[in-house]
Length: 126
Picture 1: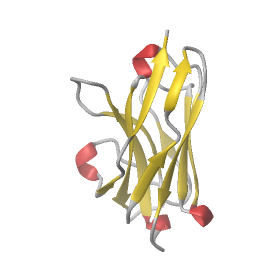
Picture 2 (picture 1 turned 60 degrees about the vertical axis):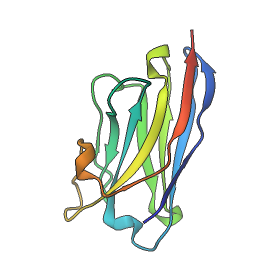
Picture 3 (picture 1 turned 60 degrees about the horizontal axis):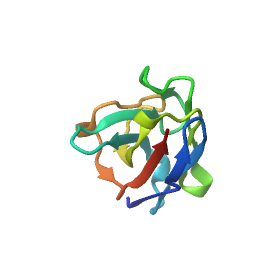
Picture 4 (picture 1 turned 90 degrees about the horizontal axis):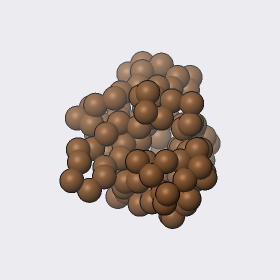
């Protein structure tokens, strides 16, 4: 599967952005999807994940309550709605796909993902 992330940009603190991750291929619903981010000089961090079918989701404390991941399997697209953005959210955001056996599984480690998109820059100004 090929992934294309989009929707990044420049926003003021407190603002919102919605990222999209469009996937090619007819087996999109077989994959759990995750979002990660990487700021300059830092490691790639987990941001959100969603299971392949029943839309079970998981977030780290850093974005819980501010970010929402969702998916539309009919459109082969996953979304990341980001609200109440902070300057520390500034990073390149990547979507990734992991083959998943179970309907409710999601994954938080980068090594668990099989395919990655190219990344989209999010910059939050103070």
